[in-house]
Structure formats: structure tokens, C-alpha cells
Amino acid sequence: MQLTITQSKTLKPKPDETKLGFGTVFTDHMFNMDYNPEKGWHNPRIEPYGPLVMEPSTMVLHYGQGIFEGLKAYRTAQGKIQLFRPQENFKRFNYSAQKLCIPQFDEAFALKALKELLKVEKAWVPSAPGTSLYIRPTIIATDPFLGVRASHTYRFFIILSPVGAYYPEGFNPVKILVTREHVRAVRGGIGDTKTMGNYAASLLAGEKAHQAGYTQVLWLDGVEQKYVEEVGSMNIHFVIDNEIVTPILNGSILSGVTRDSVLALARHWGMPASERKISIDEVFAAYERGRLTEVFGSGTAAVISPVGELKYEEKRIAIGQGKVGPVAQRLFDTIMDIQYGRADDPLGWIEAVE
Ligand SMILES: *Cc1c(COP(=O)(O)O)cnc(C)c1O
Image (cartoon, rainbow, N blue to C red; front, side, top):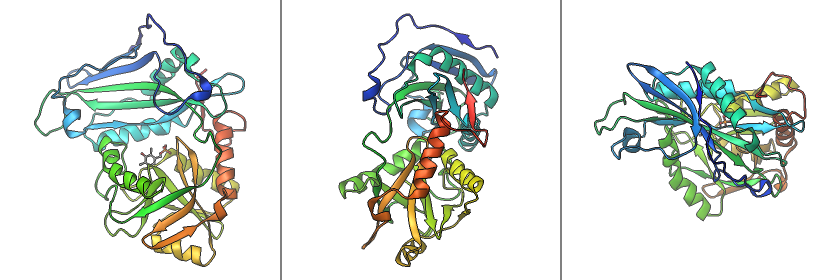
């Protein structure tokens, strides 16, 4: 497939790097590629960023047959641009595609196209501490049709957004509300994919948590509401007796690239790390016995998000006296140092763009 590049005639002013938020500013160009049953994926192109024109009957708008990914490009102190395990994101994208009846795409080609897009947009990769260029690959069903079936046509696009440091005020623990009233996903469903409906399904519980003074929700499994699954849209980890315990991928949990990186680094350091079912009762019991020392989330946006308080029904526990624990801190520093090229890359996670 031949990738064509059409340069934008006008370039936007770059935002102030010290005032970047998340997901509000988009770059000058985007990647687009189409699918139909005759040609398969075709017409890959980099062109000016702009609105998608579609009929109101477009399938994704009605039945949510759409998927996305989230990763970042980082600028090193030497000015180089690099990606962190991007192959994992495209592999997961194809996994989500298969579960949503979306045709498979060539992962190596998609990575090549992303790198070309990043070369066109390299001036948009910010360099202020903690900033990065967020990358959002998306695929949507585009048939103009109201019947319920898999679409025959699709659009694959990638947009880019410069984002600020996740912790501009410092790396501080957050308060999390354990919900039994709502569930995010169930086994056999699509909780293990990055598909639009999962996020719509999480909004109400998130809003209720905010109203109660909590940053996010801790989700329990959708069948028994007993086992811990995720925190907000991050994976979750516990440190119990100096071992990292992470809920096992059971079909309703998203397989985070950061989650896998946490487990791989811990094992690389010789620290015990297990993936297994862990019930919320076990978490609270471990706390009562003084064995639970840390709780933290993991995901691309925050890397590591320490949890300082968990509330579950009438019980409330304060973990680590409001301070970031040593395991969360070491993981956060190490992953960030690898991403920004400040440390060695012992596990081969960095992909240079140029
Ligand atoms: C994206 C996401 C994660 C984290 O995945 P990363 O690959 O580490 O960014 C975890 N849970 C949910 C529900 C997600 O959407």
C-alpha cells in the first residue's frame, strides 16, 4: 500500500507548552484509511486535520461499532522522538477489532503510517517536562444504514494532541470509591476491548463518585461483584506482603500496556508479582492485618496513579498515610525515565521515530 501525504496549506499556532491540558488541541494533520469489502483497507493517506463528513445514519453513531487506542510520543532531552511499546497498542487494536466484527488491519503498516505522521508533525511533540504528544488511533463503522449488523465499510484514522504533564501539582495519592451499584463490564462481553460503549457505561458511576468527593471508581466484577477489576479506566495493582498483586485478565478487564510493563519491570527487578483473582474482602482484610502497603492504578495517561484512600460500603481505609509508596514511586520514575530516554531500556520497549 502506498501512503500519500498532502501537506496542510495553513499551519496552526502551537499552544503554550506550559499550559497544555488533555485532549483539547489537535495538530495540523491526521492519518486516514478506508475499508470496503472489494478493496480491503485502502487509500492510506496523511492529510490536513479536519471534520469527518458523514450521514446521520452512519452506523457507528447508532450502534457503537467503533474502537480506539491511546499511546504517546515522547521527546527526549536530545530532541529525538520515540514511542513506548507501540506494537502492543496495534496488537490490542486488532484484538478489539476482531471482537467488534471490524476487519483486521496490517499492524506493521499501521505503525509505519503512524511514524510517518509523527515525522510530519514532529514540531508538535512538546518538550516541557512531563509533556507528550497523545496519539489516538480510531476505527469507526461507516455504512449509512440503520439495520443491526456489522458495517461493510470502515474508516481508520489517527489524530494527535499535545498534552500536559499528568501531575502538574505533584504525584499525590487519590481517593477511590468502590462501587457495587454499577458494573463496567462482564465476562463474555467487551470489557477487554477499547470500544466506545465501555466508556459511556462508566460515566454515571464516575459522576456519582465525584459528587461524593472521590476521584474515581474501583470496579468489581460484573458477575459476583466481589473481585476487583479496574480503577476508572486504569488497571489496578496492590502491594501485599511486598508482592505486587494484579487482577488476572479474565475477559472483562482491559489488558493494559502499562499493566504489563509494571509486571515485567517488577519481575526484572526480582520482585514477586502475581496475576490472580483478588476479592475486595481480601484487600480490606490485608489492610486490617497491616499487610497491604500500596494500591495504585496504571495506564498510559498517568503511568502510575497512587491510591491513598478506598471506601467500600461503610468502610474506609487510608493507605500509606497519604504518601506515595516506594513501589509506585519506583515504577513511575523508571517507566517515565525509559519513555523520555533518560534511562536504559532493559526490556526493549522503545521504538525510535527519528
Ligand atoms: C486504556 C485502558 C487501560 C490502560 O491501558 P494502557 O495500555 O496501560 O494505557 C486500562 N483500563 C481501561 C478500561 C482502558 O481503557
